[in-house]
Image (cartoon, rainbow, N blue to C red; front, top):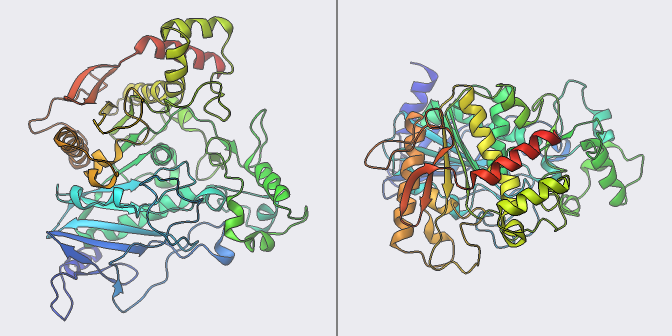
Length: 507
């Protein structure tokens, strides 16, 4: 009998106490004791890597230690170190700890060879976790999939370098992108263990939102992630972001190493600080000032990530897997192009003629101010990636989410950034405001499309409206609106064309 078959057989065991609500599963590290309720088994707080503490801070993830007695897996693990929550329901419960490399699994009772969906949370690579109730996998698991949510290192603990660290590590060791390395380690754990929970390791979908969506595209171009997943879904995952090089300073883009040295100086550390002293810095000190997603947390390190996402897609070097991707209709409606920060500066290189043409396309300054940042950061880049993936011959499905609850208090004029998450997970009860039958219908539709995509690499099926493949219907998408999903041409194409022309001249 193969190792996978042994694990699958052991997955069906229960404790000698014959408690049917506490299923016991054998993993490669040791047995884990989950909980079962209403036909779904949950296993939480499972370590997929050793705690990244002490000498393992700013080192690639190492395998977890093994155990022999059944490990209680009824509660989630700690959050990775991050700034205080700002009310985002995607953060999860305390405590925080550097010992946070855990994942959670949900599977229907009796699962066998089911599709696997691995969720990568967002939060600008600074916040969030796989432990939030927003990402509870129970409802999706009832649709006959196995759901896995993960934690990964964040902020300066996950995306950082410094000359002292470089001097102390082997020259061939991957560095800088520790959070991405954690994501890959979690996918390796899934490959080696998910059969024991009833999942099919040869049918894994990675999906994520915002920074988690960007992570999905990074994994699509990461050599060491190749073969660990077989479909990919990107929710508001940017697309044209430019990374810092690990060690090479570029005009306007300091290297990760220079950024690390600058932070250390601002934190009062001596110029000759060594790696041991850096690893002894209290974790909370690394939070201030909070690193920026665009300038600090995106790194091309030469090993884990060898180029930017858009460059790899333009050259056809991304993973040749079915891709589902899209954005929300009013992503960053509150950010104006005059605001400080990376998103507000995104139009700074426009010529006067380009600016005037865009003003006209938006119907004047008011429309420009409300929508151009969302189009620059999300809508045009996602169309660009969809075009490139379809051009390479790979199945591609594009969506736009425009469901706005009647209880929405924001004058956004559409669906704001991250508002689609509870619809995908069917966890509408976690968002803190009343949602009605219309929202439940929208959620059931999204969850149906997403799980169908995980099952077959195609979101279509059942009695849902047909979602056109981008290869056959270029620039057609599925719009999720208040009256249900409808296929049609991508909205606002003229202004996106102007942005695409601007991008092509600023590369």
